[in-house]
Length: 272
Image 1 (cartoon, helix red, strand yellow):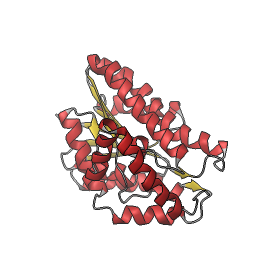
Image 2 (cartoon, helix red, strand yellow; image 1 turned 30 degrees about the vertical axis):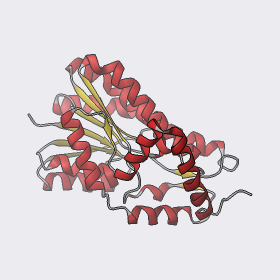
Image 3 (cartoon, helix red, strand yellow; image 1 turned 120 degrees about the horizontal axis):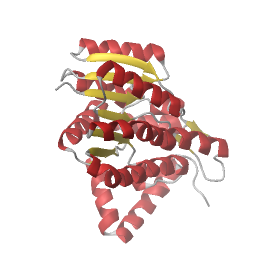
């Protein structure tokens, strides 16, 4: 059976990579994005790769956009099999410097954007008796580095929501997958908000050094949906740190404190 996929923020980065991965299987992939030109281009790429591409404008800050897309896809394709809540933004800054406006901005997109996606499509999944939510969080929500409080909190919120819904919806045949990558090459810093000079350049350097690509993460997600796995943790080093945090929290705390001092020094925000 041909799979039907909806991806928010699918016009670039991980969303695009995942769309093209599903296209290889001949899937029907709907790109929801706020960039019409890029979205239409990716829809064409999906077609060229063997799938059926479709672009719709969708702002994850509006529940009505999700409801409109859902109803549109029910009419066009008869339903949806996988909803990927991928759209997100980044921010960095010390707690005393980050504005409340920036907190509200990132939580509205990164947390409530995922909430809206799950809220809008859960009734459809229940009616179908099947469906998968793929919620894109981050290792930032598990590792909690300094100077990234708003981003860390937003991604920890996605993890908490995903774990909750995995239990809440399982008996309805609904699968939930939570994706927590570390640094990999993407365009996340393009809309990044920060008062720290040079932070975007430093983050971009870390992304470029990563041996993990967006295509690698997309492949991991594809397998997790197929196998109905919950966690997707693509980076080996960060997987080891996560296990250390769970099983030896004091050792993890000491190690992270040393890493944090280096990180804050690099960001030019070391405190006396």
